[in-house]
Image (cartoon, rainbow, N blue to C red; front, side, top):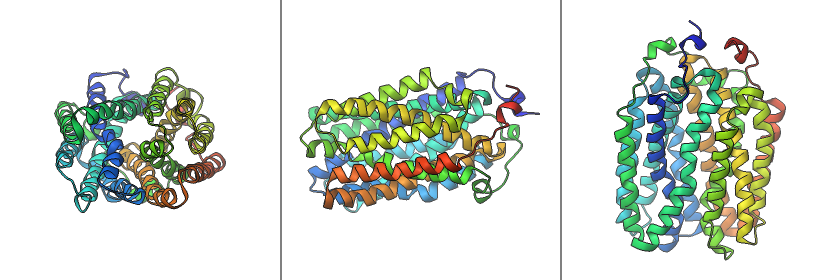
Amino acid sequence: MTESARAPKSLLNLPFVLVIISVFFFFFNFHSFLLLPLRIKELGGTESDIGFITGIMWLSTLFSTLAVGVLVDRVGRRWFLAIGGLVMALTTLPFAYMTELYPFFPLLRVAHGAAFSLCFVSAGVLTADLTPASKRSQALGIFGAFTIVNYALAPFVGNMLIQAVGFEGFFLFVFAFGLLSFIIAAFVNEPSLSKFGGTEGTILGTLGRRGVGIAAAALLISGSGFIPALNFLPVYSVDIGLDRFDVFFISYTCAVLAVRVFGGWIPDRFGKKRAAVPSMLLFALSIIGLGLVTRTIEFIPLGVLFGISHGLAYPSVYALVIDLAEEGERGKAFSICSMSFSVGGMFGSFAYGYVAEYWGYMLMYILAGMVCLFGFALFGLFGRERADFNAALGN
């Protein structure tokens, strides 16, 4: 039986809707930790402490993401999604009461990395399982939109909570969202693994497929700029005397939602590489622009540019990798994408934390953007997508 024959006919079916609701609650909790640098600063931490504590979270994804990718292909997806929400909730609670950075801040952030892997990989694979293959980029874009909306919503709500009730009340509030993610995920009805013909290959075998390695490298480089750009933005904004950093997150989120709601069909219609390559260029330029900000209003167009570029590039490359992999390798394919992006973010956080501390944020953002320009060139020259995929679907 072909993939098109097995694929669900409706994009917004009930199991998929439950997945994205669970993802929304998880990432409200998860992205609330974009405000953690403010707490680290309050407790006497430096920029290198911020880089280490935010970056070490991604270290655990080196191990957990690949493990989850293999396991979801073998035993199913739903309970990994549920456990991710539960782990995130339980490891949020201690932050309400801790007043020392070490050793528990880094240890709990390692657990957050594992929770991220559990949720993100299982939910991403469920998205591919539960939606039509001909609309894969669009479905992954919708899934991503429910994670990204919390880049604006979680810091906005969180900042108001911190001012009103302090960090203790803030962490207690976001703890509840992890529990909601766990509860919703438990009701997801996932397809049987036998539908996809069993498991196939290994992580290295999937990575070795033509085009997958280049896509993974491009995601690694993009992650090295994306994650530090957002993690350092609150303290960078304060450092240059601009306290309304939230306008960047809001404009970024609005742009992502707009491009994925109204333009999510573009990669599926015109080709995933064609959508990703110019988006990667704009993404790199938006990061460079952050290093040149002098007024709050400048955060708005940069946020829009950052959002449009990320909103098209990210689901395009993920969908491209899933297309290149076999059906029984979806978990492994998605975990390769997630791990690449996370590893880039981890090393970027470590490295750019030191750059910011010793040479300033302007150089940090310009350097991060220039590195992302290399990723754009690499993918543009050597990236590949499965040319026969649409033909195989009968489009």
